[in-house]
Length: 380
Ligand SMILES: *Cc1c(COP(=O)(O)O)cnc(C)c1O
Image 1 (cartoon, rainbow, N blue to C red):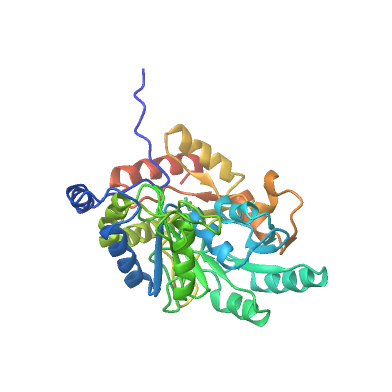
Image 2 (cartoon, rainbow, N blue to C red):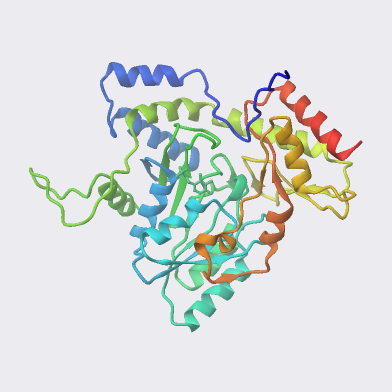
């Protein structure tokens, strides 16, 4: 019988030294609720890290997107423009509101929303008499999108931008933190993200008014009255004080985590340096990616026929998790028939793309196993 080797994950939680102390404090003070001093402190600390003036800690990144779209005024029958290559959580809240997504393809420099395709889409949707209420670019895998160009298009047509920075905490775009250029931005602290609260998210707002509105909606939309009174439908989306305690500990080691992930990328870049047909995405000038996940493009015409799937399956046999790039939303059965504008680049990225194990807690032994497996499948 062969002993199953321990699993090497794509991205697994990585705790620091302080989380348990903060959690203990939450217990000692009996703030075991979706409010409390750690929630407030976590918001302040996130504000410092991102430069966002108004941060609201929430139960998930998806909840943050849902509230952002409500605040942007998205209603039944509206359209929301969304990056096609992303995780489904970016697009789902559009449908929660009975609005319709319009998907935009990628540009080659960052793999994120193509500003030219965005403008084509706006013009064409307007020609069809559609109301576009928001634009949702994503900083996928931690790589900041072409924010200045996207903002210029959005401003020209006066459409608010909500940035999905779920994978980009610790990235930088020309001196700004992703998520702070649009009217609102969102972060995620899910278990696989760069830092985690086990589950959680945050809304970054430019205006205090938007944060107040989001706070109101996230706490069941309670009107000012001694009894419970509601004139609007609310949600239970606030972050727990216990989870904010974890987040505060995690935030203290954020920079170390980003550096570890960037070092993973460098390891892969070095490993694949002389391997024909395998390429990694470089950072444009003035941009820092968290390298949340290191992603490869595998061109079978140049690898001697070896495909992304050959590599993924060889890793899987060795109990090493790798995953195809996110499947574009306009190819998802659930979004069948949604309008799409773009050059179809993201379809090729999906077809040939592989996300490699990228956790900040990978060991040298893990990299040895990865290297041995890849060498076996690729040859020397
Ligand atoms: C994780 C993720 C989300 C959703 O965040 P949750 O906290 O899991 O709800 C949204 N968008 C992207 C790009 C993500 O990776």
